Each structure stands twice: as C-alpha cells, then as structure tokens.
Image (cartoon, rainbow, N blue to C red; front, side, top):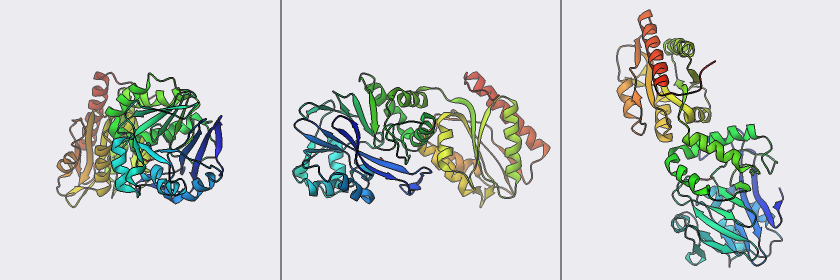
Length: 396
Ligand code: FEO
C-alpha cells in the first residue's frame, strides 16, 4: 500500500499485516494487525515517527521512495514491530538522528545495530521544531515497556501514541469508522498488553488530560478522529470498579467438572450474577483476557490430573496472575478421583492477585446432591459479596 495523507504534510506509512494470527508467539490476532509509521514534513525538517516490523521493511522502504531527506526518526518504543526497520532506514538516510527516551536508547542499542552517534535522547516535555511544526515528547513509561513515550504534534493537535490506544486490526480504513469493532479489538489489546501496568497507565492517562488532542494516531490499528472514544474506554477499563460478573475458565475430562460448571452457571444467573464461560480446551485466550478486564470474581473449574490442576487450568491461572486484573474474589470448583492438591497448587500460582479466596467446591468423582448444594452456597456467597461491594451489571 502507498503512503496516505492524514493532514497537510502528515502521512500514514507502514504496512497492513492481513495474515498474522499470533503476535509474540503468544497473542491471538483474529483480525491481523498493522504497523503504523508516520511521516511529518515540516518547513525545515522531516521526521519519520516509528518504523515497521522487519518482516514488512520492504513496504516502508517503497513508501520512502521519493522522500529525499529524513532528518529524524522518532523511536517511541523499542519493541521490534516498531523499531525493527530503523537500521534499513538509517542505511538510506545515514545522517538521520534517532530520537528516543534515554532508556529506549539503551534498549534499542541492545536489540538493533544502530551506531551510538546516531542517537539523540529527549527529556520528558522536550520539544523539537521542524520549522512550521513542533513535536513535544511526552514520556509515558510502561505502555507497555519501561522506555515508552508518545509524541504530540502541537500545531495539528495530533497525538502519536505507538502501542498506547492501539488495536490489532488489518483494514484498509485509515480512520476509525466502526467504533464497535474497534472497541472490541482495543479492549482485547488493552487486556493482553496493557492491563498488567494499569497503575502506571492511569498516571499516563492523567498526564495526557492537559493536552488538547484532535486526533490519536496509534502504532497499530486505525487513527482515532474522535480521541474521546478511546480515552473514555481506557478510563472505564482502568478506573471503573469491577462489574457484577464471574469469569469462569474451565476444563473437563470426563464431564464431572462440566456438570458442576453447568449447575454453577445456572445458580449464579439465578442470583443475578453475569457469567463469562470459557472452555479452555477450545477458547480464544484473548477473549478470556478481555473478560478479565471487568469481572469482580474469577472461578477456575478443573479436574485433578497427576495430583494437581489440569495444565489448561494452570495456564489460565498463570495468565490471570500475569495480567493482574482488578478482580476481588476467586474460587475453584472441580472434581478429583482419589485426592490431590488442586487448591494449594492454583492458590500458589496467583501471588499478584489481590483477591479474597472463597471456599472452593471439590467433589469426589461425579457430583452429588451435596456438591450441588455447596455450589449453590458458593454462588450465594459471590452474589452477596458483589452486593456488599455495590458492584453493578446485573444479569437480566
Ligand atoms: Fe507494538 Fe510493544 O509493540
């Protein structure tokens, strides 16, 4: 694809990756992604903001055909999907300076062959004049690496945000046209990438409040002509209390746990609690991550295997622990044949979660009436806890 004009002397460059289905060999990309770079031509200086994943280097280099001079390459984030083509860009424009935070300079030096003398580091709030355009660099650490920054183009009131506010979508639309679709993709992105750092991101969001932003141009996905849409979504995901919902990832081998889960879902719904159910044998892990953004309670359903939880359940616990959602309560339900340590093992895997652990329900073999009554009690406890904490989002 050729470069595309956003505003006078400001262009989208980069590549749309329609085929990728997994990012970092971990994160599902059901809709592909894009790697966005931006070219800003000031009256005196020309800047390239970020580059593209090295697998797409040729596309960016083709777009740069005819651009006779790049004075600066701004590297907002050292991860290679944005920085990986800097060496080829430098080969084409050997006099260009790489602008980054001091921390990014060290990280870029670790990851890419960039000569020391090419770097120019910028302080938080520092500006750079391009003649009739001015860039302001705003340090925003931990979105989602420690070195990240965003860039505000003062005259055009555009915030270039790299991963911050990004979404993995491959499309030919330059601007957001379907907010529903983008909301889903951006929430998935937030859940998988940003949620572990929401405490720091909160501060970064607050830092951006003082800027008059007309447009947000992220490093993945489409440009936001209505910045309030994505900023409000981030505020909700970060600041709002968790909702009256249970996220229930489970796995079952011989249907005992499955029967417990089915009964438990019905009991929760009867008590007015929403449930997001995920069969870990087939689920899209990104959907599970999205559900973790809002839910007040996590319940893991697992059979016992080799004295511990099923590996899929262990994976879900590991994921929840790493993503640090704002859940307040956690429990475990499942079955066992002759014994085991499901509860101890899973409880030991979630040190990052600040949750109250509610009495688990484990049954021997096939669930009995006694076990179903215990599930009723657990559902009642969850509903009560949600009520006491004034959590909204009743199940209709
Ligand atoms: Fe899009 Fe953190 O890289």
